[in-house]
Image (tube, rainbow, N blue to C red):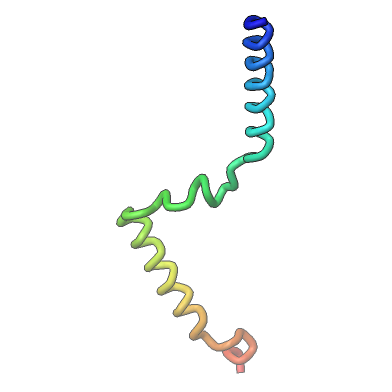
Length: 68
């Protein structure tokens, strides 16, 4: 009887592991990679330079207005 219970428990543990894996599913990329550049001075500088560039680009008049 005890052996039967041990076999049954082992089977149920395997099935539970499969169910848990399916329930959680894959980790979304934003969770996996979020925060990777935290406290990275090179990344911070790149973001600052990108913001400056976008600000300059947004100040330019539309292309057709420049040709007048």
